[in-house]
Amino acid sequence: MHKPNSKPAMTLESTGIDLVPEDQRTGTPGELFWIWTAANIGILGIVYGAIIVSFELSLIQALLAGLVGVASFALVGFTSFAGKRGRTSTLTLSRVIFGIKGNVPPTAFSWINLLGWEAVNVITGTLTLVALFQALGFAAGTWLSVLSLALFGGLTVIVSLLGQNTVASLQRWFGKVFGALTLVVVAYIVAHTPWAEVLARPSGSWLSGFLPAVSIIAAGTGISWAIAGADYSRFQHEDASSGRIFAAVVGGAALPLLILIGTGVLLSAQLPGLSSDANPIALVGTVLPTWMAVPYLLAATAGIVSIAVLSLYSASLNLLTLGVQVKQSLAITVDALLVLGVAVYVIFISGEFIGPFISFLVFCGVFLSAWEAIFVLDYFYLRRHQGYDPDALYGLHNRGVQVVPLACWVIGAISGLLVSKTGFIDGPLALGIFANSSLGLFVSFLASLMCYGMWLLFGPRKMA
Image (cartoon, rainbow, N blue to C red; front, side, top):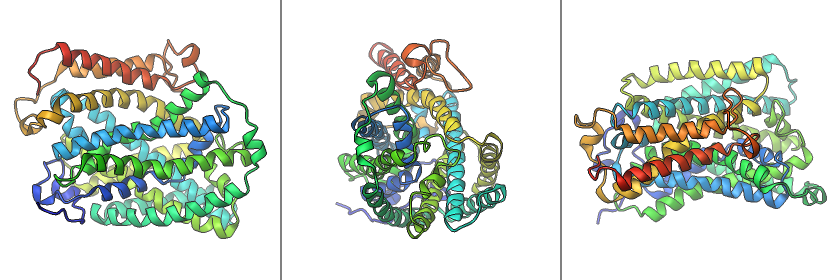
């Protein structure tokens, strides 16, 4: 039996969305652990904890909401199975379900979602640099925000051009350093938490508080990342255990997320405005002594760069799936201009981060969860047994539109939008428990799951 090499082979330039050659399938589950740790160890996890508390939940409810929300990363584990089986990127595998032309709408939406996440990462990175400069004694102001945005944006582009193998190595290093510093910060916060106040928080509503909090965390974690699962697992060696892949993906993401979310829950006692402040990252820095805040925020900035690069990598693969053949340098340049435009608007014009961020999560979540329900069900019902036909992925006989699966995706997304308030599109049925929640994500997932399940059970036997 061939023993897999530990050296990653993830290079966009050499494989693109083509099937990964057998001699490049050298990945191990351990590599996936560090990739997903790096993708979820950003300081934004602390803000997630504060958002949970804003639903007026007790300590136990808040921690449980974080745990259940992060469990959505099981979706990333499932799409990672498909990557190992199909040997290409997630949205390319989606072609066998929707047809090559029919796959364009979900792929385009996936690209827009990743573009939005790049903007979120740039905004978060800029706010983190501002917090770092403030911890060093600089006064907050427009000039400081402009400098921070320029520094972070430039750093992200430079790192993106280093190549995926180099980035993978940096992510492993960032994960270890930031993880160690995070544990120091957590210990400090736990020691300075007003426990009497935290423990005295009354229980909130399980229906109108707990479930919406879970859906927000799920939207920002597993639901957002499931579209990229196969992008990294496609390099896994054929002998890699599915159980170990699942454990590496879910464990790599859950470990840092739960620690950071728990930290945010505790910090909310000291910083009641953490979930609504224009720069929640700077607010976090104010509770730490300078000797701790400076290295922590510096490491956090590096970590956010690695997260932004992951989004950029998957966005590039989606462009290739759409048939947009451009050089990676040009794709990065166009991408960067669009992202910086959004970042400039949020930081300098709207002046609000959390509100637009939650609206973005809810709006994207209803489309992504609908697609994920179909993709995961299709994998377990069909592809797990029969695999992915290369001709259906790239050939002539599947170039059209698979109408019914695409309709199931649209039905699920519309169902979710009808009961959701996103801030710019408010569904007419967003009433009662749906009025101030993001439960439309669950509606979207279940509607597509049921619709596509009925098609698999009672539709034509011949599937792509």
